[in-house]
Length: 284
Image 1 (cartoon, rainbow, N blue to C red):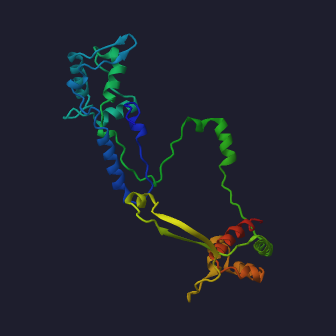
Image 2 (tube, helix red, strand yellow):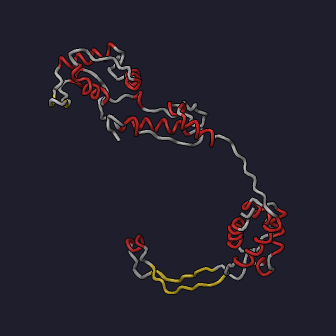
């Protein structure tokens, strides 16, 4: 976005990341500046001469004499540096509404001339990366003194603490019943495909994935599993994912049907269990 009126408001990148990303953000901002380098960077006589701003009375071409008056105005108020680049002081004064008035011969075109000055790219207007994690002061505006706001604030500003108490026996009973009734998992399946490479396969066919012919597809159930000597902390895993205590998880697992518990070596089954336990543990 390179609209002279809004470029410095829109081209803002906020990165919430580690400290090392500060250099990344600064580099990216520099790349943005280089990408819009086609915009004029020097507020000199050559730039202003010949510009044609639009006014209510029609177009007005900036003459060499007017261009010199503009540059003298910028130099006099320290709005340009030694390289004829717009300084931060110009943008700060414009934002604060304290911009110095133009000389009398330019006063009639002040709005148009300030727009020409704004169109000159300024490095000082590229926002630098800041640490947004620091606490910022919230400056109160005039609404804070209104009676309507004070009445509202008096009702909502109080801090509240909510406590939730779970009945352990009810929680355990409902979780056990839910697991017995709802958890169903079929055996793991795998697909075996057999094929062969076509005779005279070309390079283009290989690139397109058309050099092999599929002859047979077979779907089978996995009836055996690879056992490991490493013990799996099932209770600990479920306790971590549900935020319940190990004792509560142990009582829930001990209360479900043996046929249901026998399926726990299958990993997908454990994931289903952690999704269902919290759904049944919300009753206070």
